[in-house]
Length: 156
Image 1 (tube, one colour):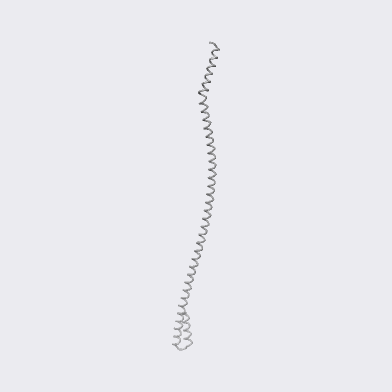
Image 2: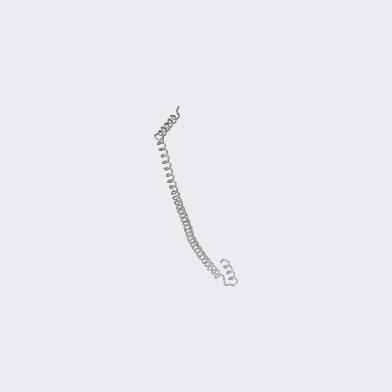
């Protein structure tokens, strides 16, 4: 065999292989590579968008939480203020009730004192009349008179 013929045959076979690869194998490989690059680029873009939307969501969440904290502290302060108002109102109502009860009690005491005074006056008057009757019935005697007064003073 001729070495020139072998070299030429191998060169032609290699050229056919290159032509076949460029014509039939290379385009699908390039398409696959391009598609893969496009998918990777789309994935990276989506990741960037996701990251940006996550940051925005975190900021919004922080703002909402801050607003909720402010509102809750506002509600707590209003509740404390209302509680102190209710306590003050209850104290005032209790003081008014106590003053009214004290006034009623004083009035009742005054009435009882006046009633007792009237009863005492009536008893004193009746005793004085009885004493005067007894003194007038007996003769005027100093000893009897002083004994009668002692008895009346004991009764009073």
